[in-house]
Length: 387
Image (cartoon, rainbow, N blue to C red; front, side, top):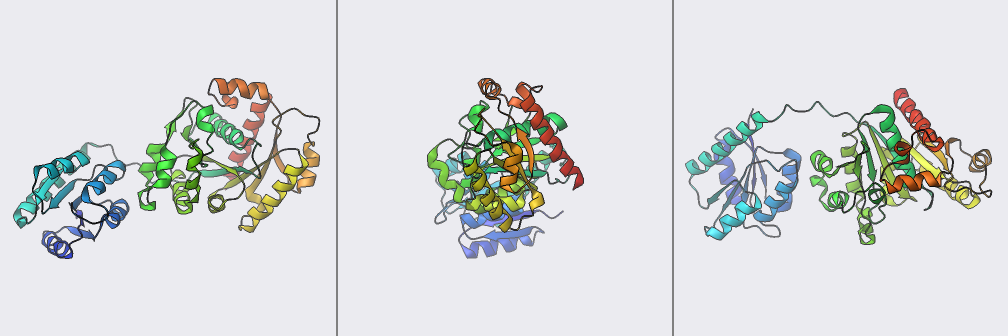
């Protein structure tokens, strides 16, 4: 197989000469004229080696190297830096950033070829010691959970559904909270300070690789894999990264059998972009007239996105005991849509579960509320089989 070499240099003459030189040696050449373009090509093409100039405008070679080493998809690619500078300090900075080798310009063809061949040889030896490649990824079932307004228990429903699916299948289940600045799942499950989602939404789209997303997932004692959202209100601006969300969902769908998404409340642009990518959209409602009316309107707007009614499931989540709650049959009638599941109030159970950082479904699986979630998980599994 012909090795691919990516050359990143703002000097077009250098690109042409070095590229032609290595092409004559049988290598496949790809080129970029700046750091941003080089990163995009590196993440997309994953070359066998990267030749990188240090002195480039906007983003120098040191910063490009740091970003390449930060991303799991490119962190092991050999990097050969070359520059017109020969000072020792520049070489030290280059090696500290993650470069594997260093040459100064101008360099002789034989010297460059020898360095390239040596780096490729070491990389091939290292690759031979790694485990065999995983089989082609399959798309898991993506389940989005949302509500028309806050306080209806979206995070609770998402967490317990994910736990119930894991309980039933013992297969990989990802619980992703996609509302930066409003995170609660991490705290309730005993995981704080995680910045994986923030980093993904802050990267360029090309940097959101499968490996990057996989490394951001946090294993939990319940068996779930978590992608919790930040609690810092300042991070809410990240929800404007609509394109990033679409790529993120695509990557998550290849990492587990079930992917449960906490989409928060309402229909902001990022949620509108995600809903068509979901297999199931679970809308949480409670037995209160105002909430029922708001939920009915939201479902109508979801349908306008081109989503079939059969892809929408309504769950009635009565969080507190109250005689003022409208019964489920009347709620269903007023809503105008079938209610797929009803969760009865169990505040003591949920409070105790939070204290132990355990999903209520797993904290007390024999409880009535847990059985309702497990039954709802069975419904999701039946829909998976039907598809």
